[in-house]
Length: 434
Ligand code: B12
Ligand SMILES: *[C@@H]1O[C@H](CO)[C@@H](O)[C@H](O)[C@H]1NC(C)=O
Ligand SMILES: *[C@@H]1O[C@H](CO)[C@@H](O)[C@H](O)[C@H]1NC(C)=O
Ligand SMILES: *[C@@H]1O[C@H](CO)[C@@H](O)[C@H](O)[C@H]1NC(C)=O
Ligand SMILES: *[C@@H]1O[C@H](CO)[C@@H](O)[C@H](O)[C@H]1NC(C)=O
Ligand SMILES: *[C@@H]1O[C@H](CO)[C@@H](O)[C@H](O)[C@H]1NC(C)=O
Ligand SMILES: *[C@@H]1O[C@H](CO)[C@@H](O)[C@H](O)[C@H]1NC(C)=O
Image 1 (cartoon, rainbow, N blue to C red):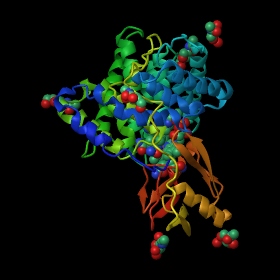
Image 2 (tube, helix red, strand yellow):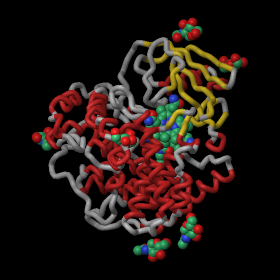
Image 3 (cartoon, rainbow, N blue to C red):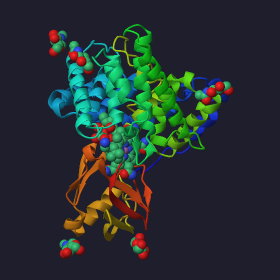
Image 4 (cartoon, helix red, strand yellow):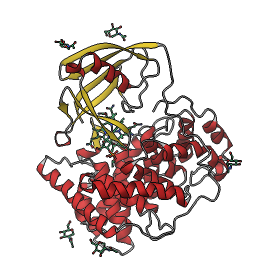
């Protein structure tokens, strides 16, 4: 989670070597693939690439044609075991990622898992999401990012779903696209991919044509693309660095819905490459979400009937070190403020931690000093540790509540396991409604 070394220059090199005019499709050219090696090793070797969390990574590496059959087999094993042992407790989106990853292409031994059964389970989990929305004021069990993933997989794997119903759910005016009144670019991008798949299934004749549905889908995609582009930053990112990869995928598949002048793909890509060189992608899930776009791929390229592509020497994974996640050993201590905020009540403490510590270390130290005020629980997720409970108060999707992380009053764009604290930081976990 903490980096002891970064990737100096690599991104900048890439960035300056790519012939600018020649990238219509905006992918990184083949000659520079080797610079992606450390990212790929991070995806394969990290402690977060275990169990169901391997799904996002396998999906990404298969779309990129990066693995050899041996490495692929290890990841498949992780996912198969997780699906077999934990299926009932997987969220709809976790099951979806497993289906997309296992079915991304046809491996050398053919299919090792019964899709029709998994897709059937997904249909049930998707219906449970909808049922929860009916019972809880429009709030799904998980979120619209996952519902969009679900629809995408049902569409790609011939599951049963109602086009009219999903079109109604993915209405761009739904509150579920927003967190704190801020449009979630990741969520919007996933919805565009799902709607585009559904649209293609209608126009290719797999589903019977209903012009009202088609019109609604067109309007939704147009509106979502406009919302995504409205979150474009000066340096070309879409939302923040962690939503940009999926937003690029959404823009790749919907070029009919915006003008060339509205998005300069190369600028976005170059900023991403610079951020890579600065170590922004040390979490495997972050890496998994950016890689397909950099290689010109999207989740719509998932095709269970096409043969997997294996790396033919472009990459050199096994000999590369992953981007280090071992803590920088430091003898010097720093002091930070930490507080737990619930409505108008604030419990504050000043703690000392080693220089280079992350937010989680601060929370652990505070808990050691006063377990009543600063107790908390975390759940391991594909993005690292997620704070679920503080002072015994638990986040709940039915009420849209969660523990928000802030530093010096600013909403953080990283989690407790990744955010490196600085001396004098005013850190806060705040009971919030999204
Ligand atoms: C939905 C969502 C939320 C919801 C989660 C609850 C819900 N209703 O589902 C809410 C709004 C509460 C939320 C909160 C946060 N989120 Co959020 N979230 C997402 C989103 C859009 C989808 C996640 C998902 O369902 N993935 C699919 C499923 C299958 O994967 P999963 O791993 O099982 O999903 C679970 C975890 O991802 C977890 N989760 C959600 N956000 C985060 C963030 C971190 C750091 C961790 C460890 C876990 C986590 O909740 C998911 C559902 O259970 C992603 C976008 C993305 N690109 O992934 C952002 C995203 C993961 N979130 C992000 C961030 C930064 C946060 C916060 C740290 C923001 C803050 N300052 O408080 C907090 C988490 C604080 C904490 N308590 O630890 C970043 C992470 C970037 C990074 N490098 O770490 C992302 C990528 C958005 C972005 N582009 O910035 N999030
Ligand atoms: C897959 O599962 C379905 C439904 O559970 C079942 O009908 C079918 O026979 C299974 N196929 C194989 C090859 O096991
Ligand atoms: C398919 O889904 C629709 C709506 O979600 C439902 O009404 C219908 O009964 C389902 N059909 C089958 C065969 O499961
Ligand atoms: C693209 O440009 C044309 C002509 O300038 C304009 O009519 C159209 O509305 C634009 N489309 C979008 C999505 O902005
Ligand atoms: C892979 O690594 C080996 C040993 O480090 C090196 O000799 C070889 O040139 C590398 N190949 C590529 C494609 O980077
Ligand atoms: C924790 O804080 C509470 C409230 O300030 C105080 O009553 C209690 O004694 C503290 N416990 C410890 C172990 O310091
Ligand atoms: C903690 O916050 C208080 C009040 O805002 C401030 O005076 C103090 O300098 C801060 N201490 C540290 C270590 O940040």
